Length: 177
Image 1 (cartoon, rainbow, N blue to C red):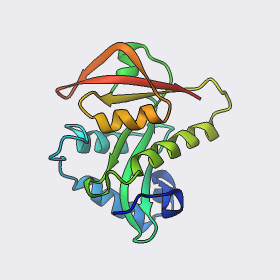
Image 2 (cartoon, rainbow, N blue to C red; image 1 turned 135 degrees about the vertical axis):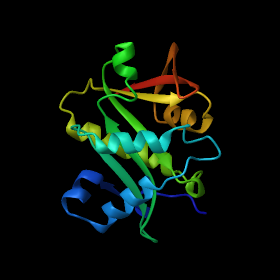
Image 3 (spheres, helix red, strand yellow; image 1 turned 180 degrees about the horizontal axis):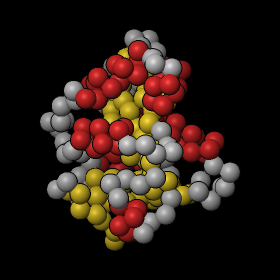
Image 4 (cartoon, helix red, strand yellow; image 1 turned 90 degrees about the vertical axis):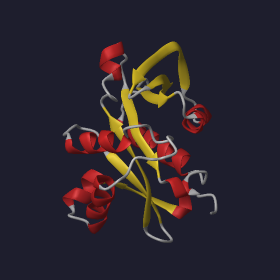
């Protein structure tokens, strides 16, 4: 499959789609509720449980889906959250969190993850009036692809800080906007 560029995709806010009673919203929820755990381990061991829990919870932030324009097909999802798996609260780390990043297995390696994270960052920048807003990202240490994406986008690993979640040591990364 070809590498994706901004012109190849659309991003949609789940909150906006829900308010419009959109068919795309219904399709997204259906996909998420029937999602099977990834057998390759790259999505994290409990991604479907995490996304269902966070989608059902009311918070002032949002979840975005990435859709390939040519086929009008959902290829991934990501969220902006007040905290990710309570890591911020537990470790007393301030900031806004990006979590629940998931790209369908068949679309990985096409640049969708980078495009999605860039979109989430731009949404945070648009909503933020303070240039010192801190975005903190919780990463599973066993996923070198996600680590590479975050590092490429300017996120910095907090040295000597790991958190054990769902059977894995997670590294915490941050980036100041």
